[in-house]
Length: 91
Image (tube, rainbow, N blue to C red; front, side, top):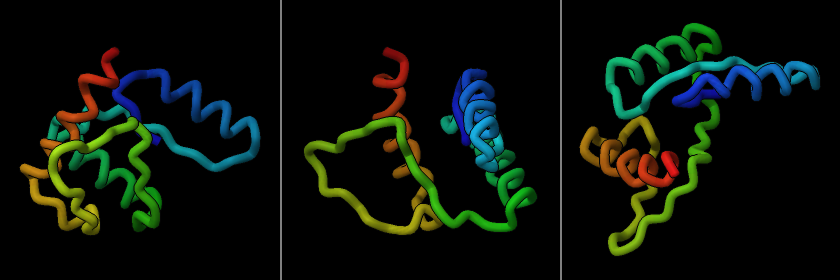
């Protein structure tokens, strides 16, 4: 699990209390260096990414959605997606 805040530690502890394997990472996805370190850490720990869930809540209005593997997303598209999330996450 990843979050921009330390609250991720509480969430992961709740999962572990239920005997669910979970790891926690505090990362700002707008920061490419942090994001690259995060991905490297996940790959080091697990060897691969099977599922990626963006649960920040985001709606795209006014342009068609692109359904492509996240590994093929261009930097500009990633930045646009993240910029849509941040204003809502800070509310």
